Image (cartoon, rainbow, N blue to C red; front, side):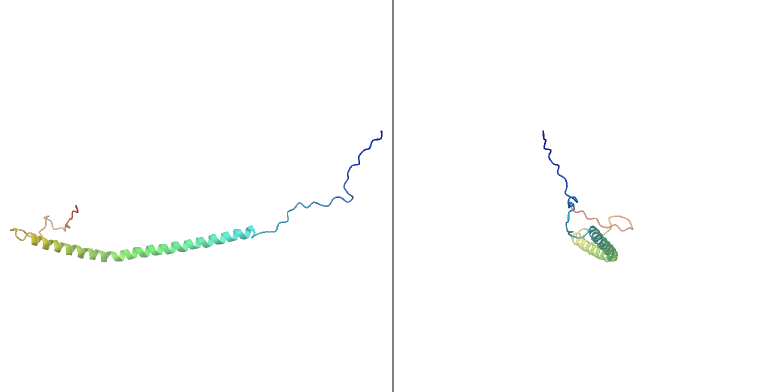
Length: 124
């Protein structure tokens, strides 16, 4: 029996050529350090602007408060003039309406006290 044994395949002399298994992709865009630095710069600039805005807002609030403080006396004086004008007009109306009533004193106090009691107005 002459058996024909197949011959085994062997590598060529000197071996096979090395396989290229690494990917050779070109880099696209900036690296991670550049992106991190840019984010850090943008955040730093943003926080600086927020701080500047807070300072300006605080200054505007202070200016608003001081302007109100300085306006209060003028507004109170104007209110006092308005109240006086209204009281004089009410006194004139009372004198006109009650001119025929005997022993009527126009503008007499309803309360027997030396303290000032402002007139109350009931709006119905």
